[in-house]
Length: 300
Image (cartoon, rainbow, N blue to C red; front, side, top):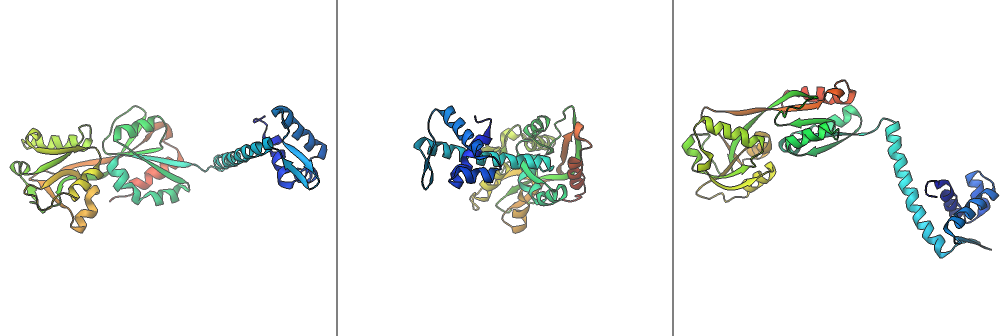
């Protein structure tokens, strides 16, 4: 019976109008047809659901239970119909996936403009770059923004904006650091599968620094968690607490003077963010619109 909601809709109309005749007029069907549909429901459930009284229709206990169920069904159907209309009218949610630094500190500045350009809702998934590319391959997202190009067959990669990794602390520190200076700090590091961790390790190797000699007090996966840990560290500690992070993550704190940055002497750690999308959607109007807009941002 649930597959044929028309009969339940008739039942709701009878209850709303408190009359078989008024329900038939509203529905545009004959009164005998209304009576027949109510009888079908009662036969199906093997119980009476309505009783005719002088002052109108009265629900039985079973009828009241059915009424509550039918109201919930009607709301679910109406909600589903709205979703179907979105498809019919070409309305949908455009899903963007991004790695943590981009998703939390870069992309939010441009979501409103992206939504405006494609005239649709925009949703954002944030995860590590490898997971974001997996979601792209599984067609769970439309466009990916990642910190490192994890090359996969069938995916187009476009070089986007340049990013710089800098050392930072909540205490004033030397602007340019030698290898020996790095040993004077306490450290919070990124997790080992992080692209930031990989680039940092490569930079340290180039200047002859062994990370095993650092005093590491924590390893965290989230750039936000690292930033917050350093922001709330003891500002008067003898050994400053430091980490290395995308400059985009700490930009606001550097401008406000709550965090201080430094770089390795004669060494700049840079990388590019990348835009990725499936080759099969190369000529998709929505993907093309979003990608071209992002590429037009010469500075982030």
